[in-house]
Image (cartoon, rainbow, N blue to C red; front, top):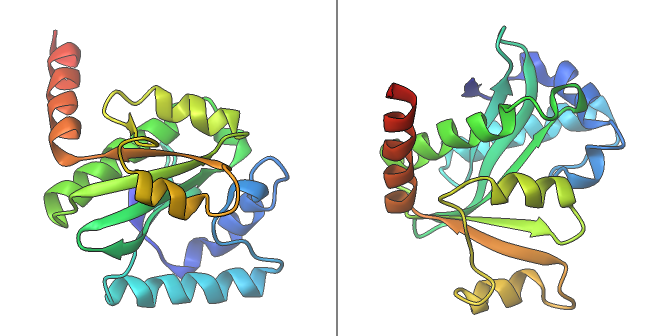
Length: 179
């Protein structure tokens, strides 16, 4: 479902990213394939420096369909960025990718808080995050961060995920799947 980024998948990902339904919501926007290669190389280096954790999202047969990143990592917290190509919308990949990524972040990298900033007008992303039982609205709880991401106007809602909530929810989901 997830793998470390490499340059071999860039062509497929670039083509998916350029879709007008996806491109406005991509964190690392590029205007050319060569620029996308350059940014991917930079992300691989930044991961080695532990300032980002970046993964490629794969479909059921192992083809790249999007990316998921934890960026601006400081003091065991960071921000989540994710996108999936339009042919894969509504098929559960987003939620499964997040589950897998959060498990890696909390259990392998000891991340303490993952923030998600979602554009208020991005209805698809808002609906997706609201389906995640362990993602909590943080507009009022983390007002300093909320103000920093909305310095001129209120564009984003802020959500957060912490290990305890994720792990408790994962146990509940495992019990429900087992029964």
